[in-house]
View (tube, rainbow, N blue to C red):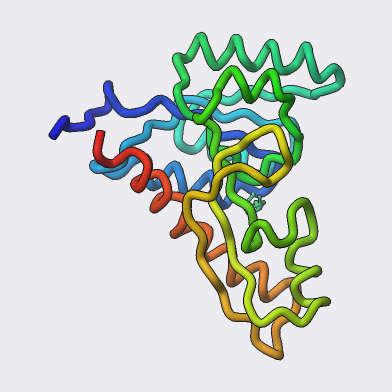
Length: 194
Ligand code: GRF
């Protein structure tokens, strides 16, 4: 078995827009000896994203793009990814939709975490929808990103029971906890045999 050392771990970029709890979780995971990934770059479309603080804390390069001109921005990002020899992109609460061209440049190498049991509840406000529909379960999904929103091949899912007393806030909290277990598991599932 090939031993993954700092220099041959998969160079990874994490894309965020907000709080960054999944980012922090992936950073901590990446710092474990057996993790197949190393996080070399954090990209955000939002300069106020709280998650950007983790870049400073863990000394990871960060780049912020305003996406005013999507095509130009994506070209700049692609250049930056190339410059940093990035081989894997993990979307973690990234709220911009990437173009087909961008995705094709990283075909099979972009993962996303989504807070529902896909294909149920693509897009935003998943917890509100699950509560409103009186679902018995919700959960989270890690999937490959393709050009259709939240529709790529599913890698792993985790179910979470919705209790009568749950609301969108408590459900979000419960699911987030599972997200933090699921993302590293999905990465291990894909890459730990390298
Ligand atoms: C998570 O619920 C994730 O599934 C969704 O956006 C949220 C991001 O949370 N895509 P955080 O910024 O990682 O805390």
